[in-house]
Amino acid sequence: MSEGVVPGGEGGLVALAAADMLWDRLTAGSAVPAASAVFTFPALPADARAEAKYTVLGARVVAVVRTEDGRCGVAQAEVRQAALELKSVEMDDGDLVRIGPFGSTPKQENGDATLLRWRSRITEELQETASLGKAGRCGQAAPCHLAGVDWWRLLVQQTRDDGVGRSWWLPRAVVRLLDAAGHAEAQWLRAARIRQASAVSSPAVRE
Image 1 (tube, rainbow, N blue to C red):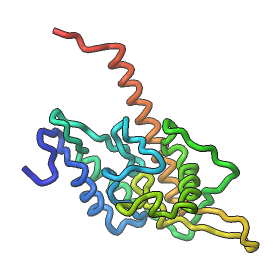
Image 2 (image 1 turned 90 degrees about the horizontal axis):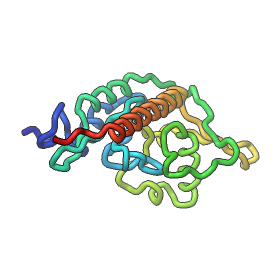
Image 3 (image 1 turned 30 degrees about the vertical axis):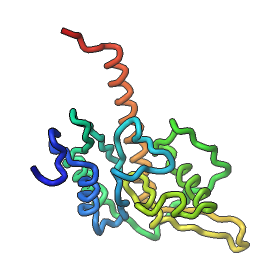
């Protein structure tokens, strides 16, 4: 059995740690810096995968599958495709888009942790980091990420000449990528809810 393959898994499932290593290897040198430990380190600020069992890489949702023996894995083909799509993104470091702050940002509820509100999530993260420090917020194991992107390495902060106001910017290509990731996640969750509702309303017939 190949290292990292989930025992009993179907469709080329690989364990989460092995999927992390595969992701790191395939995204090395990409214009958009990829985060590490995307399957084993929770996203910020709340781990939406805890119940739904998925993660978002670029504009692709990769489902986490649990086999009969209780092991978790992901389809190797999905990881490869997500890495290929991320690596194909071209980015101009000088073409920046302001992402905040834009007035007051309401505190998110746990049920509102999708990437559709990634701007608010970054704002909240930066505010907490200012008081706790990056290590205190995210830990030392891996940088916090959104859709597999290490946005910390791309964030540009600008301060007004009077030293009072500040603004945050990201490359336009990354903003488009995160917007696409948010919509992909919303569609995936909508389809998952429909499947769940259908399963509840139409239980399997027992012998």
